[in-house]
Image (tube, rainbow, N blue to C red; front, top):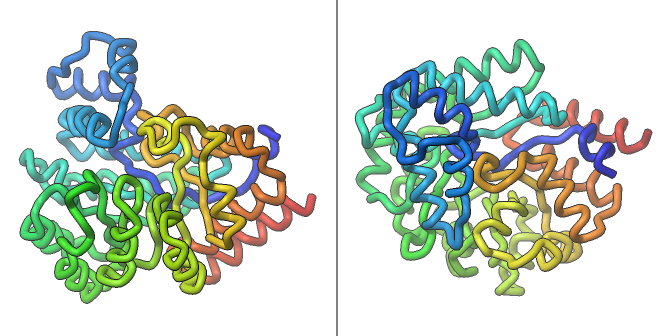
Length: 333
């Protein structure tokens, strides 16, 4: 089964590039940039990756991002992730990046996106992996700050496909960002948002009805509301589920309790993703392997998850069809 998963063509739709920052690379870049970090070894840093809630994780996540200062840093971070994609038969990746994490400390938007974009171009040439970028607004910051980020993004619109909403969910409902999402859509960006990870089903309703999102990131708590589940099925909207992230952040106590199979049985279109793999113990294939074992998923279940990852990507239909043919050929064989 692990071999089947490792070779299964797949897309990753929920991935924060800052969350791919492996400790070894973090130390290397910190040394290069002469930035002090509060750990004197890779081992001690790894031991700090023990979280009891989303905020615990975010504290160390933002701390690690402090060492990213130059275009080369963002290039190295992104290319390291895409190399891992190539090893796992990830054919397409939709990469979230948090510009405010960097612009707030004086790193320019141009520096951030240019390094990421260059890595994506090179990975396409070297590995044949397609990529799209999702610019995420930090929900713990103000609407005004999000509008500033939108303005900074406009010279680079050709490199950005969508906008997202991430960071601390509780107390920061989607309604807080209704106007900036409307402005983002007017600029041609596809709207996406984290909803229902820590927030209730009401947050998912807000994301659907106020932000007009096209895909739900996480969405676990949608199951609190049967009418919401029916609405998501009716709208044929996918959920980007992140099993190992849910486990690390105590969204579930163990993977055998994870609602992924229940979601599938209810008709929800589920995808499997790694979220922040450096912090949560596994790249996308490890998420597939772990959830397959925990829920005894069949090969057909896994093929359906892979199909969903392409069907509900932001690719054009021709690209979707090309990748779906790869999935069908693999699963048929």
